[in-house]
Length: 356
Ligand SMILES: [Zn+2]
Image (cartoon, rainbow, N blue to C red):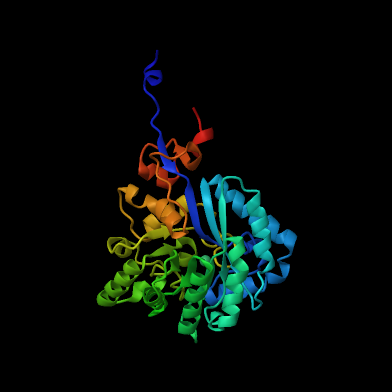
């Protein structure tokens, strides 16, 4: 017997991953967009001009590609935002993704409505949206920056989500600068004593808070039970643009948030669209980029919940722990350290069909 035969190869078992924030209606459209490269507002304009191409077949092909990528990356759950226009009924992409999700055995797919929080200031409209998405397991969401009627929009969203039992999800303060949307969301959550899960994506504006303000906002987020999701690909690509090479990082205060008891999540966000011309639906890749962008130091076991248990809880799903879980909920990696795992070295396969 050779020494190698006597020594079992080390393996690592981890929960399946959770893709907590992406955009299946926009993904894989980059090839037809023309010039891409600019800040958030430029990306919104460029992507909006592509909407005429969003036929049912087009959406099915691109969103299907995104879902397959997530499955290949080892995901058991995925939340996609769906752009919402000004009608109360769900857009075409909602039904396309819902239909695709039914063919994704072993993956939970959530759709989150995405529109300006100012649209939600109309309580009748907000209620109609919430009532319409509730039977589909949908998530009530909005883009929150310095909108007019922001407070009224948030209040209506929290009321409607409580009434219909919906999770809440926000694109909040997606920009470097002195924004206060995250704090407004935390204030509303505390005031309304909202019981459901709340996920705040981006929160880039926390980078520009002074120490005392940051501590106050983190305390409110922790008390409100709000999870914060960093999206490194899109925010490193879009934020901090001026001339030439950027000298700022468009992330959020991941280290301070975690130290303050706020569950942090990392996700893929935009993939091959006007907001990010590269990327892929792979939460581990998002964590890998977060390690460099936000200085998430080893040991990496303390950051893995950002793409597993914390991400699941933020989506209102049962977090999967390795101990006591079904092999169907777990992944097997040939990586021998968490650093190798996060770096993408070694295979990552479903445990129940992994290598023997
Ligand atoms: Zn997003």
